[in-house]
Image (cartoon, rainbow, N blue to C red; front, side):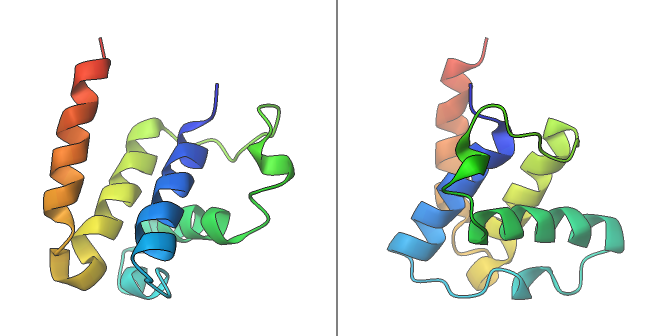
Length: 102
């Protein structure tokens, strides 16, 4: 089963980079608290690194962090990009995802 950060990375790549042409997602995290910025930058770095090779493998060991921390960092990207213009899409898709969580 793919890890949560890898799934989030794929969504960010598809939605913001491939489809949206968004250049630098690092910039939107520049004024975060140090702990939030570290997680934000880790998620973005993962999406920009060699993530299409060995890190896609299920055996890749990611830095440990709670899933809610990864999800918070993911949500912040949608809130901060283009002044929150993408929150409608985020809310729609995250609401849709609740159908599959038991």
